[in-house]
Amino acid sequence: MTKLRVVFYARVSTDHEDQLHSFAAQQDYFKKYILSQPDMIFIRGYADEGISGTSTKHRKQFLRMMEDARLGLFDLILTKEVSRFARNTVDTLSYTRELSRLNIGVIFTNDAIDTRQKDGELRLSIMASLAQDESRKISERVNWAVQRNYEKGVVHGGMPFGYRRNKDKKIVIYEPEAKIVREIFQLYLSGLGCRNIIKKLCEDEEVKPLVENWDNSRISRMIKNPKYCGDLVQGLSYTDDFLSKSRKKQDDISKVYYIENHHQGIISKDIYNKAQQERERRNRIEKGAVTKKYCTKHVFSNKVECYHCHYSYTRKTRIVKGERYTYWMCSFKSKKGKNACPQSQNISEDVLYEVMRSVFDCLSIQYDVIIRKFENIFKNLINQQEDEKNLLKLTSEKEKLEIQRDKLIDLNIQGFIDSTIFIKKYDALQTQIENIDMKINQMTGDSQNKPDYQKQFHFLMDYVKDKALNWKNIKDELISKILLKIEVQSKEEFYVYLSANHDFEENYKKNGYFLSIKGNME
Image 1 (cartoon, rainbow, N blue to C red):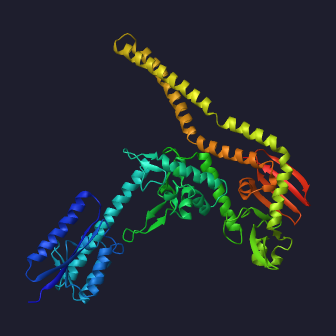
Image 2: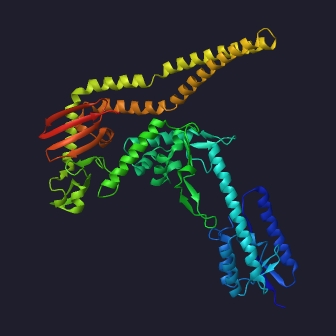
Image 3: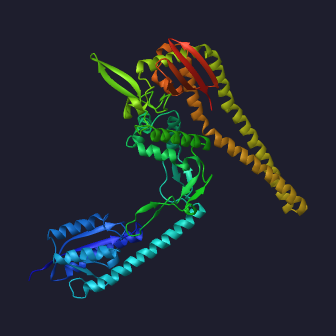
């Protein structure tokens, strides 16, 4: 007698421990069942763990089983119940019909359905429909529960880089990663693009293993994520179809939940808001520029603008008499032709460097003033010793008040003080303690960002002191730090906008150029 070659298919839909035990039990059950049947021979088992049954496209073992069926490697499939096979009616009937055409039957042991029997498909379609409807109900219950959790501020999904969940399921800062997050925002605000931020981070051997596999979109998502300033936004998308699990953007604003100050931010709201303004600025450049691309590949990228049409200049290179010549050209003129912006003029890259050298020559006489103002800003911005003294003073005051409060409680318990007087004095002491706690929390919260400011400021101070008296050796790094924009009116006239330590506007004629230099400090 020819024996039927039999396989089994098992699936569990969650990663709960008891479900995984069920997974192991299913394997054991089918092996024993097949080996106990005289007309069956066990071939192998197929099993998917922790994969939803509403769709088969992510179930690798299921798809492999179908491939083996098409190769004729077995005659019969055993599975526990229809919901284990699929909760999608269309998938269930589609695959069982294909298996029938291949002369392969499916037995659902718990549902007592055998697709080889005449009424097998009818009974299967009924059970598959019930399984699908149960999936729909489960999906609705889960969505309802998720919405209620959103309202309560319960965080769903994984933690972003720089955060962890503590034992109470609260979001807490993970400092080894948080310092990288602060540096990312700092680099972004200094003008670097996402790709160059990753390159810069990889220069640190300790940081490199964490970020070397990141792509530009990872940085972009971090810059946009309000969790980093302590706010929580949930419900921006929703599951459109419980079968396909496809997600769509949530257009109903009433179902989007925004909770301010939900947890401690890694960066301040001021830094986050500045990053969003910078992101919008870059987006406007992309929308307005012919190239449709924000670029930071070169020190002058997106910083040279046509005075006449206000499109950005684009970098060009050509060979002239055997030598490479690099120049910058109005992107509108480059794309649409010379008649698109007839007044714009091409500018040699050497001229742009000469313009910046001339700018620094004009401003170098202000060296002592600049250094003094930087130092004054630094002293006003960060005075850690004073902060530490204030913190110790507040802590001491709090301890004294707590001692007074405890003594007051003892007097009340012993009956030495009237209840009305006790309540009045207790409330007064408690209010003072809470006010001091708020001050302490504010000081300790602010201090988290100060080390980064201090590092950045010291770096800038050292660099300026080193370079301020020697503008002839100007480097790209310094240009990128202070240059906001150059507007090109002609080959001799330029409007230069700088990020400066104070507001000013000066006009100069230097080295054959007319320079209108404007400084702006936020």
